[in-house]
Image 1 (cartoon, helix red, strand yellow):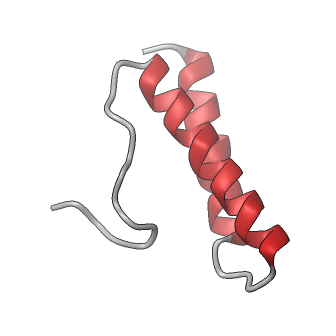
Image 2: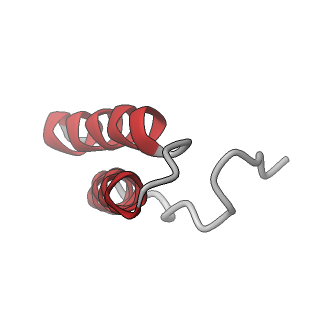
Image 3: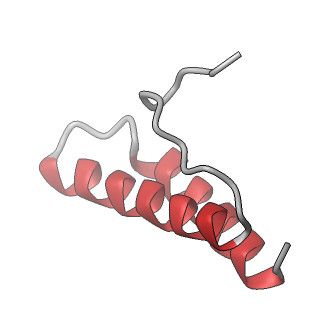
Length: 59
């Protein structure tokens, strides 16, 4: 696991959480950017990208 991958995943998570409940197209775009960054970090660390709908758990 790389420090860079973990940092990207964490930063993406924070960005997604900040903007996911916004109604404007700009908020939704920033939330998607956060998801993309989080998944980029996950892939770098050898994990599968998150593909579930935001706000759900995959238990």
